[in-house]
Length: 430
Image 1 (cartoon, rainbow, N blue to C red):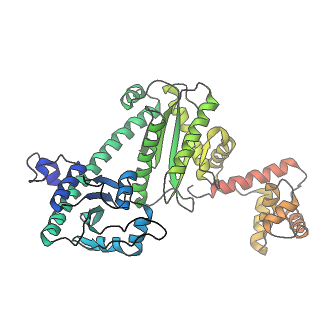
Image 2 (image 1 turned 90 degrees about the horizontal axis):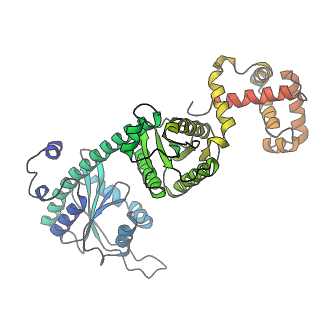
C-alpha cells in the first residue's frame, strides 16, 4: 500500500485516472461500478465523500449528505441490530436489510444497503455504503471488495497529508508563541498580523479529571484541535489553532482595543465551541490575557496555560476560564509547587489529621466544612448531613485537638490555606 502511494509511476487503471486523496472521484467511480449511489464514511459515521445520484435516495441518506454525518437515530438502530459488528468482522460486502418505517412519521422506509469495511491492516478506517434494491451480484460484490482497497489507500494518504500539515502548523504556532527571533516569520507564514490577539489553550480530561490520557485518545485530541481551528476561523479569518503536545493552542485576533471586552469575547467564543462540539471526554479551555501585539503572545499563552491549570485542578461545572477570573487560584497552584511535599500538613492541621487516623474520626472534614461555610454552622452541618449540635461538638473537638483558636483570623487563614494547598497537591493530573 505504501509503495503504491509513493510510486511516481502508474498506480493501476483506477488510480491512474484519480488524483490521490480525491475521495469524491473514488466514490463516483465505485457508484459507476455498482450502478448505485455511494457514500464513504469514517469510523464515527462522519461523511468523507459521496457520489452523484443522491437526490432520489431515502431520508437518512439525504440527512447524511446535508449534515455530513449519518443521523443518530439511524446509527443507533444499526448498532442495536449488530450491523456494524457484522460489517467489521466480514472481509466481504454485507447486505443491510431495509429499516422499518419510523413510528409516528410519514417518512418512507429506509432502503437496503450494501456495506463493506475499509481496512488498513487490522485497523478499520471507515466504511463504504451503497444504496441497492437487492443483494449485490458476485461480480459487483467483488468490485466493491477491490474498491475498498483503493479507498483505504486514499484514506491513508489523506491521513498522512493531514498529519504533515498539522505538524507544520504546530511548529509555526509554537515558534510564534515563544516571542523569540523566529516569531515574526512564523506569524507571517501563519497568515497572522502584528495585531492585538488573545491566546486560548484547549485540552481534555477524563471523568476522573486525569489529563494524562492513554494513547488511544490521541485521535480525539486531533479531532478536537481540528474542530477548534475551524471554529476559530469562522470567528475571524486570520485565527489559527494547532495541537502542541496535549494542548491545542488558538490565536484569536481582536478588533477591540478594550482588554476586558476582548477577553470576554474570546471566552464567549470558547463557550460556544464547547456547546457545539461532541466529545466523550471533557474539554477545558483557558483564556489568556489580551496581547497588544505579537511580541506579547508568549505572555498571553502563559496566562492561558495558568487558567487551564486551574480548570484541570478541579472546578466542578466550569469548562472555560479567563486568567483574570481565576488569578488567585492560579497563584495558589503555583504556591503548591513551591511547598515541599514533606512540609504539608503541619501545625494544627497535622495534629487533627493524626487524631482522625488514630481514632477513626472525621474532625478534619468538620473543620474544612466550617471554614468553607465561613463559620456558618447550619450550612456546614447540612453539607455533612449531621445535626448542628453534633457539628458544634465535633468542631470544638477539632479546635481542642489541633490547638487552634478559631476566633483568630490568622489561624483560620493558615488552616484554610493549608487545606487548599493539600487539595491542589493531591488533585488529579499533578
